[in-house]
Amino acid sequence: MNSQEPRLTTTARNKRTLTIVAVAFLGSFLLAGILRYSGWRPEGLKAKGELLQPAVDAHLLQPKLADGTAYPWNPIERKWRILVVPSDNCADKCTALANQLDTLWQILGKDAPRVDLLWWAAVPEGAPAASHPRALQADPALLAKLPRANDPAGPVTYILDPNGFVVLRYKPGTDPGDIRTDLSRLLKLR
Image 1 (tube, helix red, strand yellow):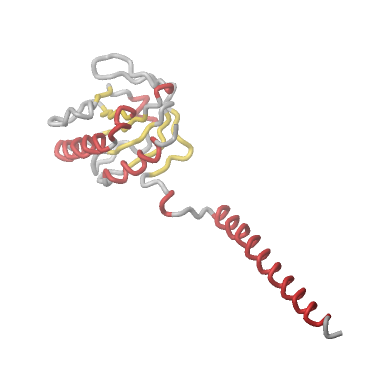
Image 2 (cartoon, helix red, strand yellow; image 1 turned 90 degrees about the horizontal axis):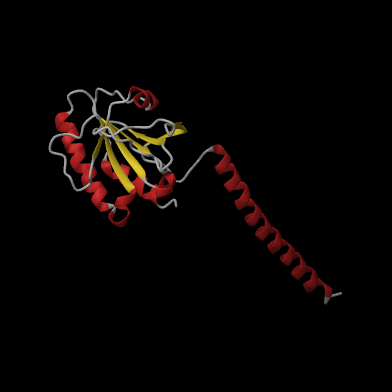
């Protein structure tokens, strides 16, 4: 009988260990499920701008550049767009934003050609030319699609995907580093 006692203790210990491992394993799945369905997201995965849900569909509109030529969406090129809608009398703010966006475009390095910088109606005076900013003709139909575009506080910035959907909005005064962070993540999507 003495030989069976250590064996029962070992068996009980093995069962206890197996139970602890099973609870830890299944508990992590349960915790992950609770966090996922509660809407929690790690800070590093959150967009810095306002994520438009659902994304605003502007792909059926055909914007025109200031010179009257059509600006094609052309999703095959996988080109993202930064669109700035200036407010009234934002000369200094718009010029400062143009400089910051030019720097942002240059920081993108090899991905810079995959980003177009568009300005509503006119590129501000003194805007750097390195990023090749383009002016779109004022189109009321496109402006109507842009959420809260007319902000008296300053220029509003949007990111449009390669298909012509408006996916992110940045309020006036947003740090361009936040735009760069979001755009860098989006450029990784192929």
